[in-house]
Length: 269
Image (cartoon, rainbow, N blue to C red; front, side):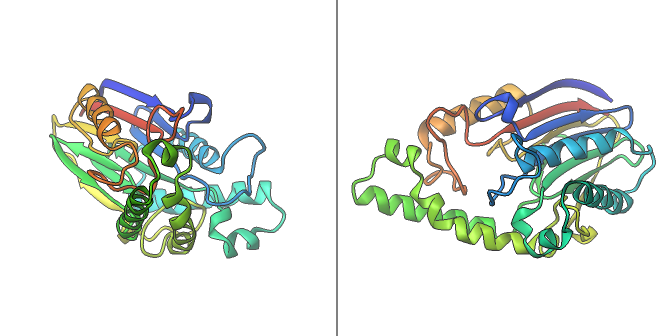
């Protein structure tokens, strides 16, 4: 495996960034910690998404080279469950309230199996062909947010005002919270509860292929980091709220460098 380029950039700053990259002799992965929908925090001063990202990175460093996708899903679930038992006194609360869980998506390349495993909302490219594994319910919710914010603008709100106070985001937040109940039911995610392997997308990788792994911080993933960054800057310029050309569940906030944290790695195998 030959690394060509890589980058991790936080939307506010690197200290709060919930995205991460891990490279070992046998695996390359991008991990995207999920934005918390609850004020509950496992570790003071750190978001649950960042904590989960760090736990997944740590686990990947210790994985055997020949681990299968299904075994990874089973063991990472047990590892996060073990962390829960160390940090909380009543794990049943986490079982009842999915929004309290730490969660992350991951896109992992296995050198031994020559496969990419897509657990949750992440993306990749193999020989310039794009693959994604989106949450099934997010597209209509993003459309709802876009329509709500466009309505607010028809009533006199400015883009700048909505960048400071995203009323559409507030409008859809209850639906995003309800959607957490479908974690590891209609879509896969690493959250310490059993991952349905049929919701994990597996991409075979041919010999001598060029591969890109990335978080969803890149709305339009491109074959190189420079192209992906230029496309991101263009989109932030023409549609900072993500309500016209590109619909998302959140847009650009004043003071942030982008819509979301972002991680990108390109390599050959």
